[in-house]
Length: 431
Image (tube, rainbow, N blue to C red; front, side):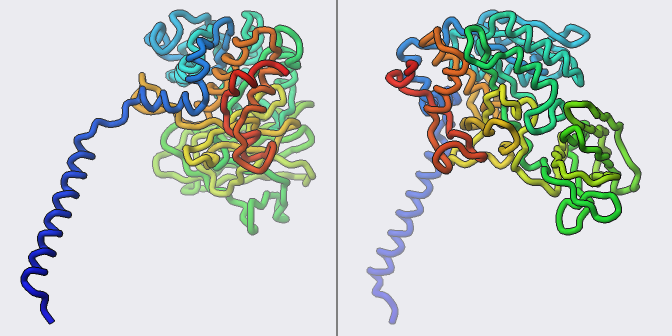
């Protein structure tokens, strides 16, 4: 039975009205101004608890924070704006050039810290690539300059055994101190973005001297990100003796220069090569004699087909002398790329911080775990400036105790003690 004319007219009028409402909604959405980066930063700082501390005029005065990084290109353009008016610096590169690498990574880290602790002093230091001694020298200079906090968001896997061991960690431990004496340094590192580009475990021989990654597969596909240099790094204890082989899948030929460290503290092997456009590569691990020791393999500048996230925190964050910070997404879950433990005498990571971090001076927010550790450094500066008599260990404990637990109760290898959040002033003073 057909509807009466009046009903059809009412239905048509309802559709027209609904269409107009949808048009108005879409027009308002298109004409509304985008959210300002300054507003996003305010919300992020409020979530951290920073705004309350700023309102109490606690902004990091009297604290020195050193940024150890390889990229400070263009830092002078931000002095007196998103950075302090002046910074102390020293380059430990052979050419003595603080801006020798075409990267502003360290500047971004410094901007995060400055937005949280704007009254803190800053030191910048870099090092010579592939020279661990120059990294140690840079850390020693930071201590000599009176740095209370050292922040490093650069990952250099081959400088440890992947388990927090090795002579470089031992040297840094002596420089930073145990954290309980006056002048000891609070060292804070990023967990790294290697969870999806790491494999860790025990060697499994296929009967022909090659490691089985999974299901009788001895080939681990490498897919370069682009034309930037790829570095494949194996690290293990000193009794391990493996060989990294990277083959061009198109030609079957081995590629890359091999660097080996076979010392009393660790065994590492690195293969680096410049990929050809459109080429894929095969990663194999060879071993003459099977050992029971575990090892880690990470890929820098490429995706790794067979990977596992556990134990993917690399130097420097794997060392017990560092407070290590991973990244969580706005939904509260660990970012898929954020490295996690266990792979250190101390439970890793220690903390998580929300990423990305809004920077009004930039076209896009700062992402990755590189943006996580500076947030902990800036927060530590606020706590320390509140009570200058604190020790580095007490500040470290305050950060961990005030974290918002986001995983199983207590510390876990996925999210540490939880999400970084400043304590209230009532709970900020030493007990």
